[in-house]
Length: 274
Image 1 (cartoon, one colour):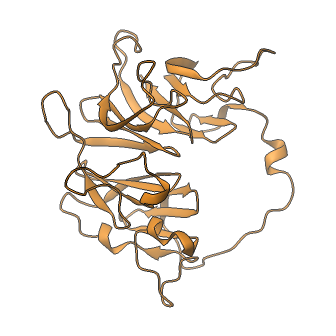
Image 2: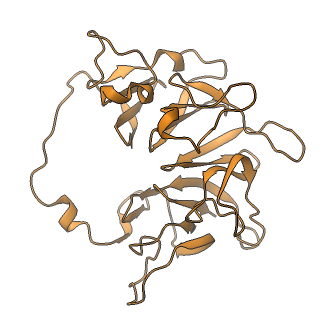
């Protein structure tokens, strides 16, 4: 397995060997940063990155000891079980169950990120179901992603749904001429190839602070949003894109390699290839 990365690198979080003494620079295009027998999960954060092979942590930088030391406050939700995925965004959390049900909770001041109505019966700070993601035309939700003030979900039929706080995320899914764009209710998002106008089936999605990338069923990677740190992997001079743009992977991948998954930190992006 090969891990490719691009974007923000101020803490050497994209460099997995022993860091040098030089001032780290951002990576402006997708570059191989790690080769391992297995790479199943990539967990990027602002100042460090964790990579797992399904059994243990393969690489991490910097040391996490100082970050996890000490007692942390906790809260228990006893009726909240059967989780298959948990993701965090700027002001809250979202969880996915084995039956495809999505739950959200967080700061009531940013209720748009919850994708549901907040009430006394369903307060913001306790897990509440997102009814708009039930009984979808192409099946239940199978994957969640979140970052900044934006959340995304993929269905069993490879459809993409997004929601969030539009005012806090002006570069992700900006309004089009028909008034579409990011809203506070989960809405279908169509990834269109600008060259031929074809809709794309989405099999993976990752969300950063102000950018998003998706992997299509054909193995293509499309990106949208901010590129100030090179996090979209687009050519130099492209500071942002307001439409889905396909990344040219021909100069990136070795012969025979295919992208199997995508991940995103706040200001960087990752491709897992095999």
